[in-house]
Amino acid sequence: MVERVTGRDRSGQADRDGAGTASVPKRVAKGKPAAPAKAAKSGFDKKTIAMVYDFDGTLSPKPMQEYSFLPKLGIDPKEFWAECGRVAKAERADPLITYMHLMYKKAKERGIRIDRADLVAQGRAVELFQGVTEWFGEIEAYVKIRAESHGVTLKHYLVSSGLTEIVEGTSIYPHFANVFASEYWFDAYDLPFPKRVITDTGKTQYLFRINKGIEDLGESINSHMPEAERPIPFSNMIYFGDGDTDVPSMALMRKSGGHAIAVHTPGKSRAKCVDLFKAGRCDFFAPADYRRGSDLFKRTCLLLDRMLADIRVQEEMWKVARGV
Ligand SMILES: [Mg+2]
Image (cartoon, rainbow, N blue to C red; front, top):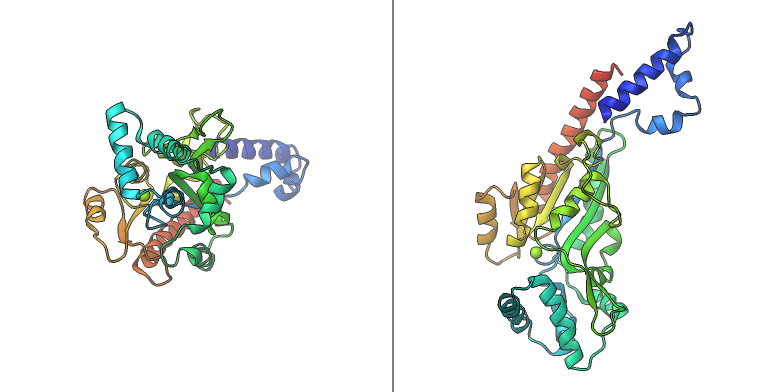
């Protein structure tokens, strides 16, 4: 797209400027009516960096349903997840649809009504790993200082199998450019019904949506889009996850020139991260300590440095190719 558009720009420019008006500076010709739209494409524009996070186990120590929903029902989380596993296996049901169904089935059995607003309110009880709250601002400040190219922007995204409603109630919700998570219909005639279920492999759809800039879920993601037209190349993305459920996303990132970082609960086993690292699923792993100066912070900054250098190199190449 860049090539095609630029070719069109340049040839159009040459035509306009070439007809006996060689002394007219190109800048003047560009100031004609069509200029604003063209101007947006007049520079190297692959300058958006996306940091994409899993939620449970990555930003928060426990599954988000364990902080409020299950305690409110008096259900032991271990018991609940084990039952979800048993039912899903016996019924050959999708494990995520199963958990979403069982949550409300059990609430109904106990005569407890939990509507959308209640779920959002439960988000306030969700705990986050150390430093998560400040992380977004700190990383944005780092990119601002280190980016030597004008116009570099950083966006944070969440892609989770957990519940959109609960995430909305967390203190970090406003930091995300977009949140892609499972969600309920609340107008079902009996129990709330899954509106959207984001499975492990389904997560990759949302990475493509970020990559292609098609974040409106009402729009299809499947149309072909040449790499050059995609607003956020995978090479400008870092995915953060904590386990097997992140394997498809990490694999896609790594295969497509993107980056992945695995985290584990500080002080707990890092065996899963080591497995992911050895299998080439992630660039780095570190304890989920998001405070400035932590290994996670430093290793993320290393990747950002490389990404920012790469953006500069590509921008320079873009300019050289066009004689800018
Ligand atoms: Mg997780």
